[in-house]
Length: 211
Image (cartoon, rainbow, N blue to C red; front, side, top):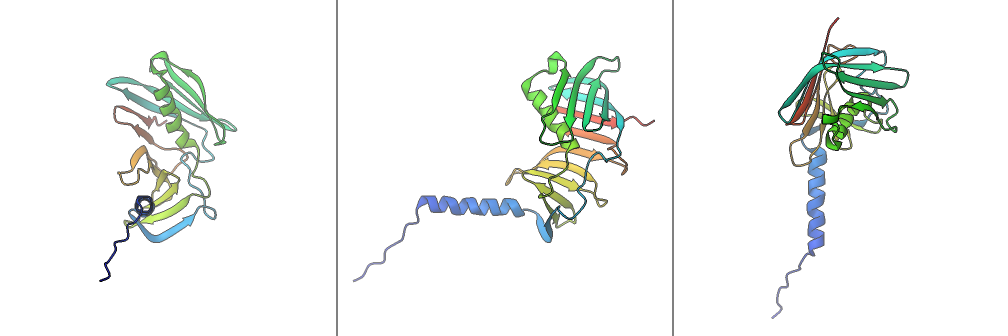
């Protein structure tokens, strides 16, 4: 009598199948098929418009239970953005410079000693860098089922308002909930009215001081 043999699937193949399912679910989670194209043929959204010159923001920085308040000046030159934050009395917290060329590293002109920690400095530089560089032209634009449009640039997600303005910048965490990095609000002028970076125990908020 001929016995039935059970074919054993190698563990490596099973692992690859599971990985492909995870990748597929991550790349398509919560998205509809309404729109799925790149940015090559449309106007790439920006946080600060090309005609932006400068803006002054009331600032609150909270770091592990400590709070700093003051103002932050964001100013554009021909090819760079300068971000200077200080107290109401003029005590400087930090002074950063960002090139409009995304291939150039930002510069730290100054940072006060209590903030001069590698983790904090990298966090500041990364967060502000998001504001001055647009999604790459080969990023993918998708529509979600609730009519929200998002631009997917690697692991970074840019959410757009109905007017095509960037309102949120998040980081995809695949099967976990996306981590919001920047929350923006604007009246559709050349710069945001408010900017919020929230990392839990470290967060900082900028609210524009109107003239």
